[in-house]
Length: 253
Length: 249
Image 1 (cartoon, each protein chain N blue to C red):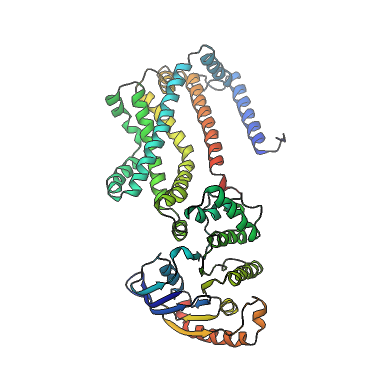
Image 2 (image 1 turned 135 degrees about the horizontal axis):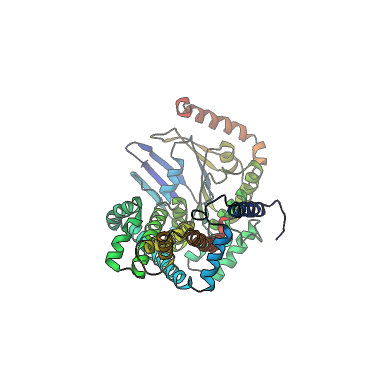
């Protein structure tokens, strides 16, 4: 890895550091009210305390558990429903309008209902993360299968291939590409579901902490939590990107 | 080898082509030429069963496994390497993966692609992809080759070279060929017999020409044969008469 000052990541980092320093200076000079916008050092201190006191761990665990179950479950259910709908027109007839409706509405409005049905524990958060991911993946798979390149299908037919070969050689890889293409969005959705679910009603999780920070007008904690969630989502993004690059290496020259 | 009788093909209400007869005898190289929209490609699709005829009969005296279809585009499975793409047909025929891939590697080498077996189609040039597509079909050792303007997308040099290679193979293996093309010179330099389709809709066979230039041929040298310009003029006039300007502009 070369270390050049004029590479884009370095430039971005330099600009970011400068902005944070200006912000810090303004806070020290008393030009900005810490009630609204605390100094970066104050936010860092809050973040540090959260980890050192160990207060953050159960909350992180709760949010991650909900998001991970949401994304894994969402992938499994979304892929299964997408495949089933693409192969069984009768099922598609029933499922497609429901999915279109669920896709059109802001799905987080279901959060209160899930709390009533499943309580304030993990269940309602998983359900919200799940429904966000399922709808996304359903459409990725369903449209992916419907839009499979007909030339590839004809190729397999003229080479003598039957349904089994068609599914293995054409449909599964084609759907994998669609799903992986949507993986990053799914990660974002899963976290949205988990955090919003906690925000609505819970006793643990980053969303719960955020809700607490907001109700006590603790802007340092609020910003610290926002930064924390951003960091984790970006880490997961990087992981999904690596997975995508690996599994879709055939796309790259 | 093949007898197409009274073939009618339609996508909507009006037939693209109607009452078409084409005969391809064993060991012959036959071309089907015609303006765009005359349904040339549809004839090949009907022969391989990709399209259902509205009327007429298609009789083949070879099993389906002896027919190879070389498409116009070079759509390979993008998620499979060149080797896996060539091995695909062999594996469908029941060969074990290892054997199929070894054989695929041989075919890639025969087509000048030795060492490129691990590349994905996106990592190959257009000419290389075309060769992979040819290897995929030839690896199944067909007796009867159907080709749909297989070289249309290639530049002149690559095209001539690949055509020459393929023709060499056809001669060595005594393959029977039905080629669909709109390239008159290609049709003359390769074929024993040329069918000329009229402008669609309701295209029909307008003329047939025997090409009495001895085989085996060299793609480039054939153009110097005295019969070449005569035939070219004849085909040109026939096709010009068919191609109405309203259809073009």
